Length: 338
Image (tube, rainbow, N blue to C red; front, side, top):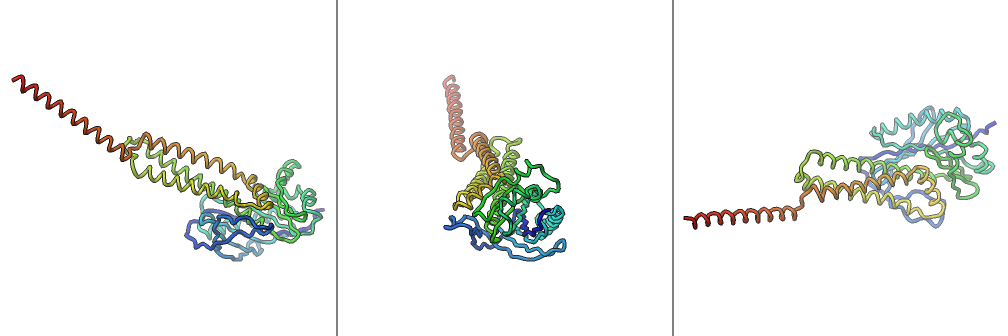
């Protein structure tokens, strides 16, 4: 018989944030290691906390904006009898309502939304690894937000990525959800790292869209236009936008390098792997290279610089002068013939 365990559920929703925000410098609450890691180059603005009631249960909602780009909403509530399959259905129903309410209140209806579920258990289990290994068939559907039963091989794969700070705690990370077990109920450090992982994922997705828009702009300008049409504004705008995109890419890429203590670095490496952030990074970097190659080709073959324009004017002047000499020579020959 499965034990009755109540869990704290943290449901994260991340999506683009557009209104301007007054920043208040604040570091994520990563407290499980000393000395502390180097301060992250991330600006966090607190938008406030509130409480709502959905499916008959109270839910605390905390809203933040990271780097003025991504709004991260942290929803916390208690889920009774975690290992009971019926609890999974309750949780999914709560999250459907939460997602709708959060996005409606934020005024966002676009496609760039990341959702993530974190299950938090305090002490009381025989040992974190033993607990996971005993109940992995019940835990796997919770992390994947699915009602179907998983095979032993599937469950083992879902629960394979693990990190621990001490013997009495364990963090299991999967693509759609995580499980945090801590004897002291100190979960916030891991929650903040998972927020940063979702933030990084959203930023790469937004960069990918921005690069595609720049490529589309160049395609439209090249389509059906002559050589002289691309001089000036359009190409300059694309080049300036590419520089901005490159700076944003470098800033996102530096985030992992700045997470330096042993535990947070280990856990964040797992998050990067499970979220496929390196794959997104490689895809975005490849598109930046494509944009660079195309803009270089346009600049070399389809645009006319000021120096090239002056050289062209000079060439035309020499041609006119040469024609003038031929005309004068022709009139001189006519004069001698008379």
